[in-house]
Image (cartoon, rainbow, N blue to C red; front, side, top):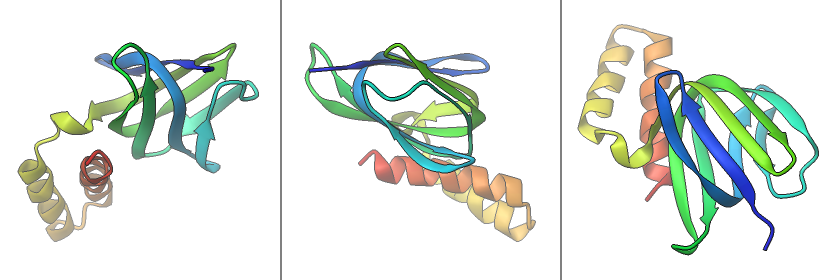
Length: 127
């Protein structure tokens, strides 16, 4: 089976690294799915969940991360996602994200609202 080598890196840490059969991310051009053999690509990431269909010794699975801005690059079987902010769905405190969403709505803070919404969507996609 053909695989991608995927690196998801945030400004402050490496979030996830491994092999995958498919990665779905949101770019300024819309959602994109990247599979082995994809044409070389450079894109700007939009805030949204990134879904990684994993492969490897532990079998198939799914990794979901909330990503807020950055870039992605694919060439020669390697996909790099370089995010301003990224966190795995299983790291997200749902109650805290819900409170942040409610506070952002009350304060009409669109940026904070979008960030909290993406975090909650990532958790939902990871279930």
